[in-house]
Image 1 (tube, rainbow, N blue to C red):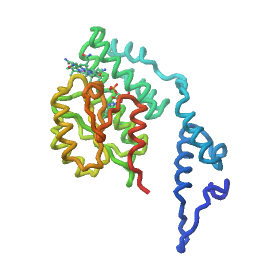
Image 2 (cartoon, protein in one colour; image 1 turned 90 degrees about the vertical axis):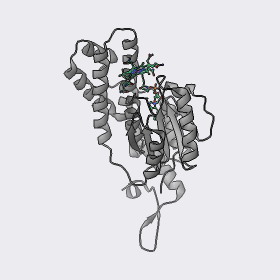
Image 3 (cartoon, rainbow, N blue to C red; image 1 turned 120 degrees about the vertical axis):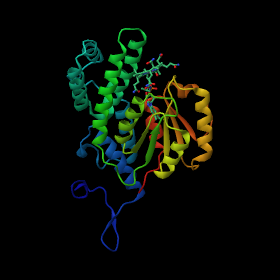
Length: 277
Ligand code: B12
């Protein structure tokens, strides 16, 4: 349709009549996809040169996005939680997910809620039942979001797990949705997994990277030992991404290890993954 309407792309044809796209056109098409995801209409962007599209996509990705009208605030979630009104917490999570979409839901709602519930628990404002209930509600909502994505053949794959004795799993579920929303196939192995099983799973699923979540509750010395061992066992092309506050404290220096402590760093890590034809 774009060929007819905008004169772009103009693929060559094989002898059998199939369209044959140049590398340059594919790159422009990728940029166009990103521009559309930022809300541009095809008529505004198709036909623009590559440099202009790159600039426009970069600017759009850095622009602060206004909160969608009616999105429940963090204070509203904690007020409902404090009153044990779980139906309201669930309903507001659903509402936020619909209004914001999966990626913004993770970045603007799930992640801040996760961090704040930890603080409120530490200062004694919320009780254990509140934090556990919120974690359950968040996990359930994130799973719903994840289930909306089909695994795409040819998409890069990232295995997600925590090492033994690390039971904080919400970060993995957030990473799972974030990756799926970025055209990456996440494979969730789960928490408290022996290093040897992570390596076996990485091989069995032919993943491109292994994402480990390391919180401050992790035994950092043991984690370092496990990661070093895994580096020796994994195929050399497989990178290890380390997320979580503990990850920044590990002090691991290896080209195959990437510390992912912000969503921007997650975007950068995703950009390094191989993309199929
Ligand atoms: C949320 C949370 C919980 C939730 C866990 C819910 C769950 N199912 O995971 C609840 C409230 C239930 C909980 C319980 C406990 N917790 Co807790 N918890 C936290 C908290 C606030 C966040 C941990 C987390 O999930 N981090 C991951 C994400 C959410 O955070 P992030 O690093 O900012 O994420 C960024 C990047 O790392 C990246 N990312 C996120 N996930 C991933 C994953 C991958 C693979 C990658 C690549 C990147 C990535 O994306 C984000 C981009 O900005 C931390 C404090 C903290 N700020 O880290 C305490 C904390 C880790 N918990 C702590 C403790 C002690 C506990 C408990 C033992 C308390 C208790 N006595 O019951 C229990 C045990 C939990 C368990 N099951 O083992 C302590 C650990 C202290 C220590 N040195 O041992 C901490 C540090 C809190 C504190 N200040 O005391 N916890």
